[in-house]
Image 1 (cartoon, rainbow, N blue to C red):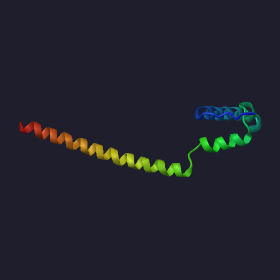
Image 2 (cartoon, one colour):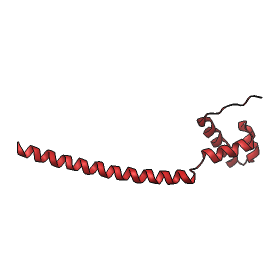
Image 3 (cartoon, rainbow, N blue to C red):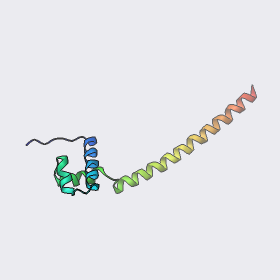
Length: 92
């Protein structure tokens, strides 16, 4: 039987479908069978596509800090530009 290559969007949709089925009271094994994959595949997908991993959390925090630093730099430069523009208007 040939393997099917699932796209990331399909995987996320199937994982959410399993979540819905399990909240309705169906066992995980039955919910996984209804989406057409094995339990091993389901748990592998869940670990890969749901929730950030430790290194991703660190990277996200570093990116947020860099973003804040860059925003501050841009706002400082914008203020300086406005001040220079006002000073230039006064000289003419």
